[in-house]
Figure 1 (cartoon, rainbow, N blue to C red):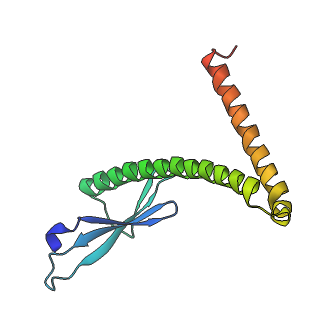
Figure 2: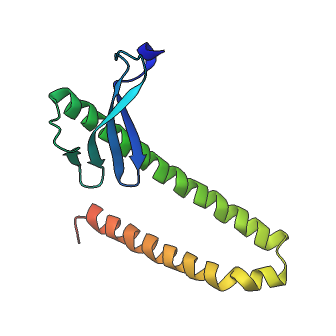
Length: 137
């Protein structure tokens, strides 16, 4: 079993992770996890835990994990947006085919404001991109 375990374990938290070195080569043949660092994905900061000195291998592994994690989070963001599009379509179908007057009365203003806000942002961002593509004319 120990041959299959990675040398490092990353306990994910909102802004990054706690980094542990995994040790299976001890006299009790137990899995031991020793915290070596705290990572912040947003600002790229790697803080050694306590008085620990990180090795070059530690830094390399942590940076590699940070790059992979950033890619995972970016992919999830796009997936969440695509799901939101699906939900908007399902909401339109629900409003058109199954919603009662009371249900529509309950959500219409809130939904219209959210959609108006989203539309305003999208239109402004699209205009910014078009202006940039034209060379800022």
